[in-house]
Amino acid sequence: MRTRKDRRLMRLAVAIASSTVLLAGTTFGAHTATALDQPGFDAQAHKAGLSSAQAEVLQARVDAELDRFGGTQTAANEIRLPDGSELLLPLPGEAHARDLDAPAQVRDQRAPSSCGSYTFCAYSGTNFTGTVKRQRLCSEPISIVWNGPGSWSNNQSSGTRARMYNGSGRLIYTTPGAYSEDRNGDWTPVAKVDAC
Image (cartoon, rainbow, N blue to C red; front, side):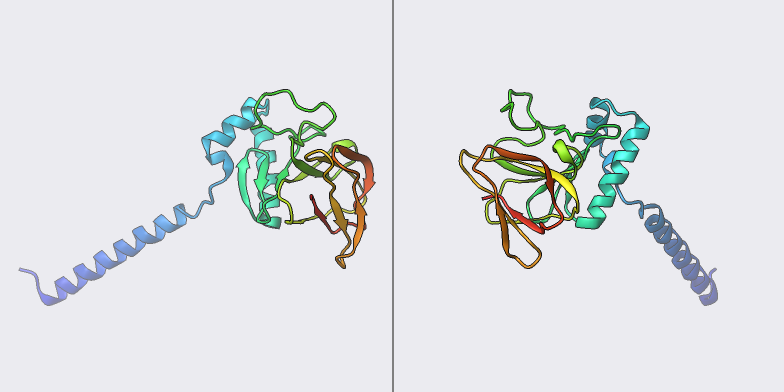
């Protein structure tokens, strides 16, 4: 026969055990899912020719950009930013960013392969190298966070001009109509770009 004291001890033991299970569950569940935990992105990285170590390096770079800008990872090397633009990172060991989920089709040979039709692309490096910021939406300016040499490709509909603004919001440059490009420009005075 259980006494009142036995019942209280039993309840206390159950409460402690339950708390321990809950605590362990939250501790083990605290792992933040990375894209490499998602089979699609891991497979995409390996299909692109990356080793497991290279895929981890790429994911670390994607995670750093997500921490910096926010957004959602949409491919092994791509992030959709809160402003609707896309950030495309070059794969480890490569100078040019590749669109890993782009359909295999013939593109306009004038534009870099990372800058599809109806898109303005800003590159962190010259000659379309480095990280790419792609904008497809009109009237949604993208922030430019790079200083120094870079490049851009205006691959929008024929004749469309992009506008570049300084930190005070003053228009400082309007691109020639599409298709146009600058393989060796300077991002230092540019704070924002509006594609159209």
